[in-house]
Image (tube, rainbow, N blue to C red):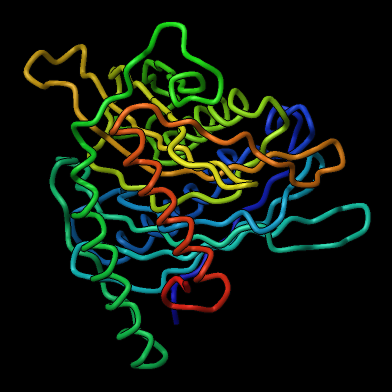
Amino acid sequence: MLSRGSTYGIMRPDDANVAGNVHGGTILKMIEEAGAIISTRHCNSQNGERCVAALARVERTDFLSPMCIGEVAHVSAEITYTSKHSVEVQVHVMSENILTGTKKLTNKATLWYVPLSLKNVDKVLEVPPIVYSRQELEEEGRKRYEAQKLQRMETTWRNGDMVQPVANPEPNTVSYSQSSLIHLVGPSDCTLHGFVHGGVTMKLMDEVAGIVAARHCKTNIVTASVDAINFHDKIRKGCVVTISGRMTFTSNKSMEIEVLVDADPVVDNSQKRYRAASAFFTYVSLNQEGKPLPVPQLVPETEDEKKRFEDGKGRYVQMKAKRQGHTEPQP
């Protein structure tokens, strides 16, 4: 029997944008909280050194349907694979209109956690294995584990990249909409063991990505999807984090925004500023009726911006082909 758990909460005005749509970051935070609870519970299910599960990666997440103020979010989590040092958790989010009883699926997400010792949070412990109802479930999980491990290694090239301000940028350029948020990590952002909840980081990332999207198109915007979020290192209490976002690609009706999270341990002179997390967010522009609007086309200026645009176009074409049931983009 695989481990399962669920949580729920009612969506309030401070969870949503001015149009009443719940922020993608709010939903991501709920997803991570459910994943953290179930994986920490599982990793402490046997006698041994006590630990807390820390988020290492979130696979691509699509926002299938908007959630609104007043609806109840039902978040269910299930452990679907364990390796020696990591736990895969799959999470589903349903929204419920409590006046009509109507329910709909809004999100599906796959998260990976690692157990960190309470005595030394830099020490990764072993994960108790789960019992699979069928052998093929273990084989499928192992394939997912190997794939995400390889993809995490391939993201390290972005670790030295920075978002630099530009004076007097032109509209529709990368510089015009790029944004940054600086946040001092306090106790309310952290686990009891002094490092930031993954859900807190994702919520801040979504907030910055939303600002970039709104600046670019100047309309109501909502999160459509989030590419894999990789957590390269823990962020500790007392750090100053800089969350930077920049537009990388636009299609006719969507915007891709790269978000980079850098941590500066200001109270520890022995450690330099480092890249803590990175991801691509996709947003869409909506009219007052909630229908998609055309997006102003991005104007890349530098060679780096043009390269990022082409890379984003490649991701867009690949994902579009995948949605249409093809394994490879069609000519």
